[in-house]
Image (cartoon, rainbow, N blue to C red):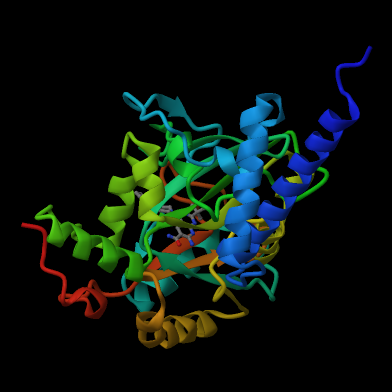
Length: 338
Ligand SMILES: CC(C)(C)c1nc(N2CCN(c3ncccn3)CC2)c2cc(C(N)=O)c(N)nc2n1
C-alpha cells in the first residue's frame, strides 16, 4: 500500500505552495523593494511551513526560506578554488587616465566598430563575493580571497535575503557563476554602530569593513542579524548563458532573481561616461549605500572576449574612482574605530 495517503500528498502540496508564496513575497520585498505581503501574514505562513517541515522533515528543500539561517556556527572556513578566477580592476583617478585606458584597448582590438559603447555601473563599496549555482540551486558561496582561492562562506551568504537560493528560471543551466558585492546599507551600518557603542564594543570603521567582517563571522545567526545586502554584476555560465553584452548580462541577472544596482547606464561615448561620473559625484551621497567610483565596461561581448585579461585585470573594464572623502559626509558623525 502506498505510504503517501491523501493527507501526506496534500501536506506536501501545501508545503510547496507555502514555499512559493514566501519566496515570491521575499523576492518582492528584498530584491524589488516592493512589499506584496503584510509582515504578519508572512510570519504566519512562515510558521505554518516551519511546523509542516518539523512534522515531515522529508518535505524540507534546500531552497526553503526556513533553510536560510543555519543554527550551527562553523569552526572555521575551508579554502576553495573558484571555478573561474575573479579579476581585479585597473583604477583611473581622472579623465586623463580614463582616456589613456581607452586609447590602450582601442590599439589592441583588431577592429573596433564605430558604435562601440560603454556601460557605467556605480561601484558599490562592499565585499566582492562569488556564488556558484548548479541546476538552479545555490551550492556554494565564497569570499573573493586572492581571486583564485577564497573562503567557503555558503552558510553566511544564504542568510542574505537578496541572494536567491534558487534561480528564477524553469530551465536553469548546469552551472552558473554569479559575482557581486555584498554590502551594508548606511542605515544598517549606523544602527549597528549605535548598538555597539551602547555595549561598549569597538565600532566598525566603515560599511565596507563591516560587511567584510560580517562575512567572516562563524555564526550564521550573527550574519543574519546584520542584514547584509547584495548587488550582482557578473554572470558566467555554459555557452548560451554567457555570451551576452554587458547591459544584457545585467538584465539577465535581474531576471534570474538578483538585485542589480539600478542606476547603471549605457554610454555611447567616453564624453557620456565622464558626464555620468560627474553627475553621480553629487547624487551618490543621497544613495542608501556607499560607492567609491564608477566601473566603466565595454558593452560589446565580442570586444570583451577579443581583449581578454592581463594577469590581473580585464582589458575591457576600468574603475574610475572618486577622491577618497577625508570626512565622508555619510560617516562624519561616526567616531573612527580606536
Ligand atoms: C567583473 C569585473 C572584473 C569587470 C568586475 N570586477 C569588480 N571588482 C573587481 C575588483 N574587486 C576587488 N576587490 C578586492 C580586491 C581586489 N579587487 C572588487 C570587485 C566589480 C566591482 C563592482 C562594484 N563594486 O560595484 C562592479 N559594479 N563591477 C565589477 N566588475
